[in-house]
Length: 212
Figure 1 (cartoon, rainbow, N blue to C red):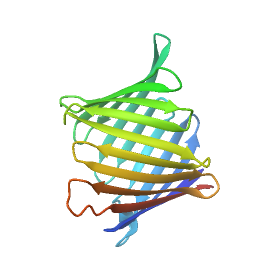
Figure 2 (figure 1 turned 90 degrees about the vertical axis):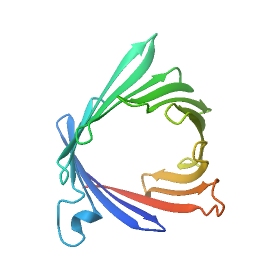
Figure 3 (figure 1 turned 45 degrees about the horizontal axis):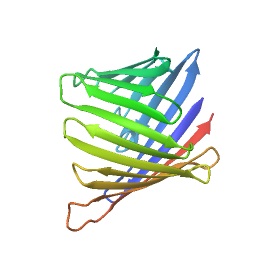
Figure 4 (figure 1 turned 180 degrees about the horizontal axis):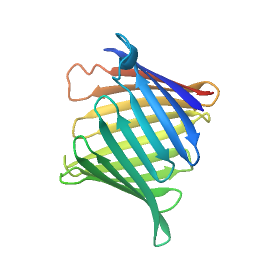
């Protein structure tokens, strides 16, 4: 059985979430809660249940909203290249999302994301240089705009990432670390370059994983 505890802190508020997962044959069962579940007495707020078969499907159930989310995954070959397909349906707001990623080689991949019945469609190209540095450019058809991102892995566990959204002129900077010994953390800052004040919004997240 595995458990995780996640804390998120920013200027306006902080939040906590906990997850417990265990294997039942070839599927994983997962239950998660947030601070809303225990604040002001135990309640169903923030309680979510999930069943997952890795690489095949995930079924999430939001207990207070009585809402299901279905996700199915598959992989096929296109000209001997793996094409990873994902189908997502949210029953509550009746949203269906199709996602596909074509892995051209170890350094190049192309992905697309489309929400059925809308103009929300994104096309993204990712290039990885030397296994340490990655560059992404994404075109949003609904906004008719580009997003750009770059990341660099340093010191083994640390990743520095920068994202710029041309539609909102929002610049995001992020430092994250994934460590089996000390847990995971992420510190991010976002600045809207269109605003006169240009005050950054700071956020910190920490995750601790446990074997039970």
